[in-house]
Length: 493
Ligand SMILES: Cc1cc2nc3c(=O)[nH]c(=O)nc-3n(C[C@H](O)[C@H](O)[C@H](O)COP(=O)(O)OP(=O)(O)OC[C@H]3O[C@@H](n4cnc5c(N)ncnc54)[C@H](O)[C@@H]3O)c2cc1C
View 1: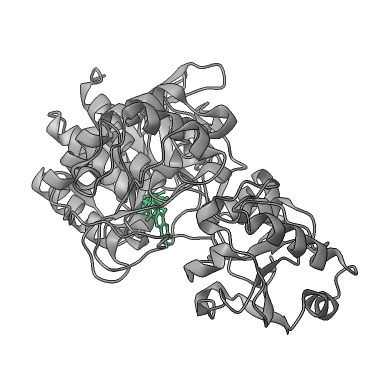
View 2: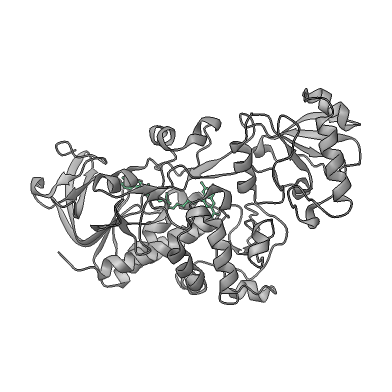
């Protein structure tokens, strides 16, 4: 490291001894966001250099299911082929709800209007898609089918504000390799566009002038410190901060409720977010997580009911598992149970670590076995059953499609305890950016020469309770492209 420069402290421009490398655009990180930024910057006529700390491309993106959340303009060809009409306004309204109290309207509008074109662009980059639809509530199905339901579209309250439609688009891939297939195609395109890719290089600091305008990066290669100049822009695409325990503890109150199930390809240490902050960039929604509990599959368990340690329901169980997990984590206590009857029971997946906590012929028996307050559980189930028989859920508005009275013994309680079941998570907070990726200060000023995309930025997904699978990669790829285009068009300094 040169002098005291670090991710938290830029190297003053005047301290650069000499430029080891000069280019128009520097992209840091070769995941989905970095790949898309590099492709578009190169297509925009810029010389592009990509620094990647790992020995190859992919990042967390290559580990993903590859699901991308798309729709609008009447529907993608896959949606239309399978009989779904997806108007832009419905897509927009859903995305605004999914973005939560601080949804970014400008960003959502651009995405809702541009997602159809983006799908065509992904295909033109060589990402393979079938035109098939897989019904139900699949999670990383690995069948190679394209269209899946991946969010809260058909669940209350979302279904009341926007006409529901499935929007998860998976690449054609065997097993759970969708993200790998996506990144393979994008990486091929990056190479074909002549981007100078430098692996095993860690960017450790930005280089900034006295006005905090960014001119380049300090990088480490083979133990040597080097200095690279970006004539137009640096684009930080370094991923989130799920591996940075100190940042998690500082920013994410839910952290203390969760285990060590942070989802990452290995380098989500928040370095890009810290570098952006070191030149005045603001980080926003740093407390928000994607968090889930795979209580389905089996799909029949969506018809079960979830109760807390007082034996009370607290959520419509047909919501996306990510939303349900947030309701669990925000509630007091550690012990949560999914109640099912014999008609619904199937063994939970091994990876969910959901175990059978109690089995009984009556709900009172289960209640005693779980050491819950007397009659509470039996009363909860009784009330649920009474309404479910009429196809109603006045308390939590579960859709009639998922309502079934729990009345076929034996009954079971499945343990979804926070300290035992599998609750994986990744971070949604990051640098505050314009849709062009330009990093903003707390006062709303643009940090000159700096852009960010993907989970280093706070983009479309910014509210854990609204997250739908496919929103992160949708955001990374769509706004990664915009950042690349905008960087290539920026004036050279
Ligand atoms: C198992 C799993 C399944 C998922 N499934 C989906 C899904 O189906 N759909 C969806 O939308 N999301 C999914 N996600 C989330 C999604 O994969 C990530 O949010 C997304 O890939 C982040 O992309 P990114 O480009 O911002 O970061 P990454 O893909 O992580 O890329 C960042 C790159 O930057 C590099 N880097 C970091 N710091 C430095 C540095 N200082 N110098 C140089 N290089 C650096 C890293 O090595 C990495 O290659 C999933 C995640 C996991 C783990």
